[in-house]
Image (tube, rainbow over all chains, first blue to last red; front, side):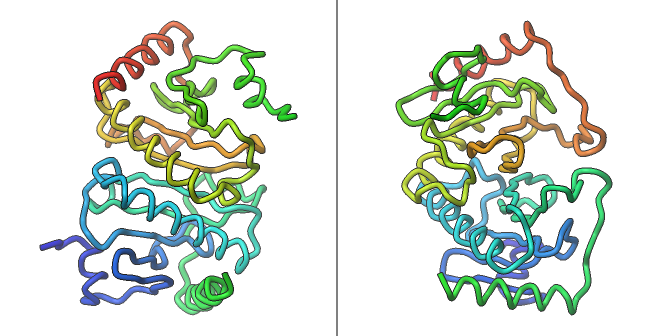
Length: 133
Length: 133
């Protein structure tokens, strides 16, 4: 039983702003975003660390990340999308996708742009952009 | 002609501490590391941004990243390896692999551990760890 916050999100026990879902993967908005559109992509199966994920899943999840990066770039006013796998926060491997602008100075102090309404609007844009791919 | 710093490294016009090379990819130590063992993995073919990389190369480069993460974890005293694709520094897609410890506070002020001799020792450890895989 995956009792992490991600397990609960996968089972829909707690709400999340989901922007992509299939049998294998789930993408949803980070609840503590460092930028507008900051999302998380996870495999539904739990692996504590990304280096424990089987190669076939690595392949599929990073191709999916690329699709989501393109969707973010199309849907938001950003110059590029940062991809980041850190891993110490939740023991369920996850990929951060963070829309960035060249001058955002995002790696200074952590600034959170969490705002439920705006986050939903952004999520909708991302959902639409994927359908256009 | 790829006249970025990475193009020059690929053509061996400027030196780099290479820890992995095959026909398709090259991995070398970052010259301005944020932690010991901080390396870069690049495709030899130039794509400005990671989202422009073809799916087959995405698949292969992230599987290679995973192998290098395992090598870093085996060879260095770290708790996990952060994987990061930013991209604004050099217009040639590259993956940062940064060995981390849970308490390193690495995302505070940028601290550089650049030290040529130590960097070489670390590179050797990583090379060896890969051969053991």
